[in-house]
Image (cartoon, rainbow, N blue to C red; front, side, top):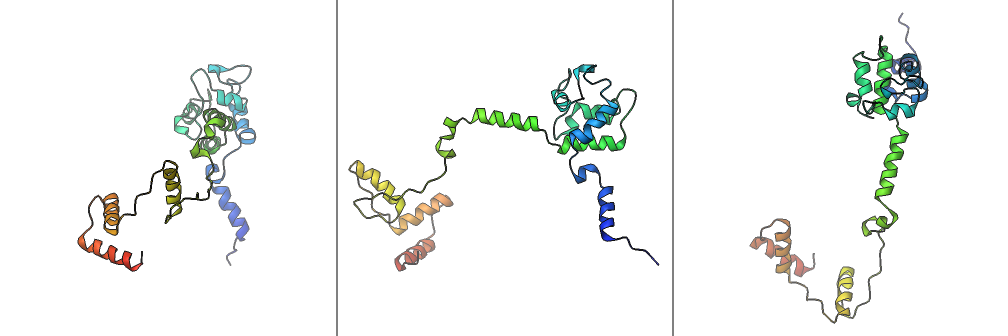
Length: 211
């Protein structure tokens, strides 16, 4: 008789078999820092910062060393630290386990980097000042009531246009005839004039009030 594994236990086994990167991003303090403390901080710690790199803190990791940034968040292939660890050039005289390598790579790919997020927000705040946010494209749209005009208009947009014209003592031009309207539409949309059949159909519908 074949004994079946309960479904909840089966799900746990499946999740446990997935690589860390497929489950979630590792946490620096509880999962990445212990790896550094066990393998790296003897040479790259507060007492001995070989190549100017201190891996004993998150700030030290992000500060990098004399060769530049240690990691490029989201891009392990561009991260100097990962390149050295992947090729077993670091730690000196040893190498990380496959599980530790996988965790570090997943952290660089998916981990959260608060200092970078704060720096990005600070840069945006400096670039978009309160004065800049007063620009029309940053302001929330407001629906204004159509102004009162002396002459009759067919749309509220025409009312706004006519109000400015009346301030100057000017008049709104008469509405274009159907043939002119369809020619304008065709030239704007297709760059070509409408056919005779298109004009006839449009004018007929316009006169019949179907448009």
